[in-house]
Length: 124
Image (cartoon, rainbow, N blue to C red; front, side, top):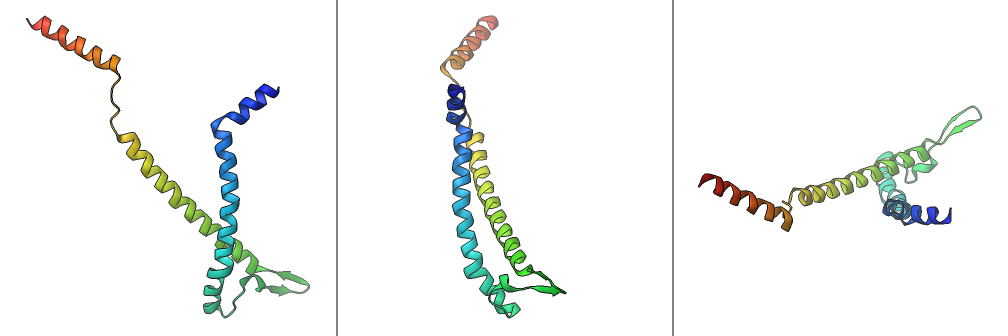
């Protein structure tokens, strides 16, 4: 069972996923700071309030914090857009890499030469 677990952890996709989660968490804190410190004050200029998280709507005793929801939506949109740009850049790189003609192996080259020699022999 320990060997199976070791094999599972040693697979590339599990390690890649772990790295992705760690980088994603760090990236989320950067985006949160961007939204809280740059975008919200910019939106606050137009709305008239600097801190969107304090925007509330009260009905009776219930208080709806739609400003916090707006912050979450802005965070989501920014993260989604950056991930989209990253995937687009990675796909562009992969397409170029895949389009490059692969050099045939020596075995394939020998087989082509033998085929050409046999065709020449049949013509004569």
